[in-house]
Amino acid sequence: MLSLLHIENIAIIESADICFDSGFNVLTGETGAGKSIVIDAISAVLGERTSRELIRTGAKSALVTAVFTGLPRLRWLDENNIPDREEELLLQREIQGDGRNVCQVNGRTITTAQLRELGRQLLDIHGQHDGQQLLVPASHLGYLDNFGKTGPLLEDYRTAYEKVSQLRRKIASLEMDEAERSRRVDTLNYQIRELERAELKPGEDEALDAQKNLLRNAGKLMEAVQAAEYALSGGDEFQGACGLISEAEGAVHAAARNCPQLEGMTEKLAALRSAAEDIVETLYDLRRGMDFSPEELDQMESRLDQIYRLKKKYGNSVDEMLDYLERCRQELDQIQVADDTISLLQGELVQAKQEAAKRGKALTAARKKAAQELQTRVQEELRQLDMPKVQFQTEFTALTCEDGMDSTGMDQVQFLMSANVGEALKPIQKVASGGELARIMLALKNVLAEDDGIGSLVFDEVDTGVSGRAAQKVAEKMADVARCKQVLCVTHLPQIAAMADTHFSVEKGERDGRTYTRVERLDRAGREEELSRLIGGSNVTDILRDSARELLDQAESYRAGRKKTV
Image (tube, rainbow, N blue to C red; front, side):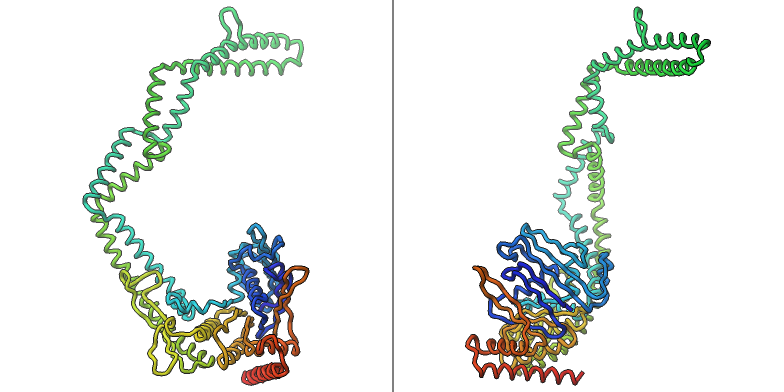
């Protein structure tokens, strides 16, 4: 459960520490006092999308810390190499003014996406406008799949449907009219002939560029090579380095007979002479290979110009142009055998559609079975929420798209209801009032939350449009849910607030020209005052206080009675 929520510089909350208990927790306060800001802070620390606009005016950053206790061992921690603290799980998110976020779990920094993945395993938030989702029939299938746990069947079907889609795309890419095919064949033949005539060789452009640079500097290179060769080998009137080294070698060798210290020097001079003679041979060979003609340079530049013109059409290098040539040949082959290929693919498509339809029917059967159970469970929840006459049903219709299939399956699903005896079932979005939508959504949430493994539920003003006896039933339902899960609820209804195990008051005030929000845990006397305000407004009288005490007594009696039935 969520044990502690610490908030710094979130909107009008400068600093707040809220210690939640297990069971049923409520937050009440005037409109605009900051109740929903608490929910925004919870969403933020769970990794949900937020904005830097949430940072309190004048602050550089905002910080939210949440401590969860009593959790089962989470596989997510091992998968993400997060240290496991047996007693608690610490989540922290800092929202900075430049839009950056720093997220940590048990002191280890993680991404916002990782925090969001973990957060959705810890706590489920039902916002003020979630009931409006029921007005969108496209969302109904998701609710049914969540309840029926049809995920594996849906994934199995999607694998088969994706194969159908891939085959359709391949066939479409091969199908073209005769005129288009003829034009494409002509284009490919022209491009293939042009590239083949060029007789390109891999890496040719790079080799030619290097050789061209060599030719353009041939004169300077020749002079340098000749000068080096002359310096080493000498000429008619000049003895080169090789001759001088040879003379030095002979002189040292003669002197070594009388001076043993010179023996090692003789070997070094011999090696030096040998190396110099090798260099002379290399320079000689290089000079002979530099016999280039101006015609050779012209031919090379002409070839490079041809390659350059081809690059403008077919690729940035010879290797890319050769790859393009191969692709053209393959495409031409495909077009020439397209009819045969299409026939083969169409045969595969028939089999793929049969397999997808088989898996789709299995998915539909599972959904219809789940729909029957969902209908029974939701109607029981609605009966407990003072809607005993409501009929709830899931309507299935076949999809009208190609082959009656899309990525969601073969079903179009929408929820129907009848609020009054004798009235026909109609789509929820056409007949449900605001209060009915709120209670139906609460019923769905309760049913879906029973086996989802999430230990905490948050309801942000789900009582919109609910009043009177229905409000009392909603309060009792939340108290029942809180026997198995931690429930946090923002409410304006005294019936719901009175049913809570723990009650927090959210108040807004001013100090030194700034607005501040304070969150206070109420004792019995404080609850009586707060409930009196919820019942009668700002003018609290003794009669309102008596009504508040009566509400609290009734709530305590209800909870005590439910405990005896456990």
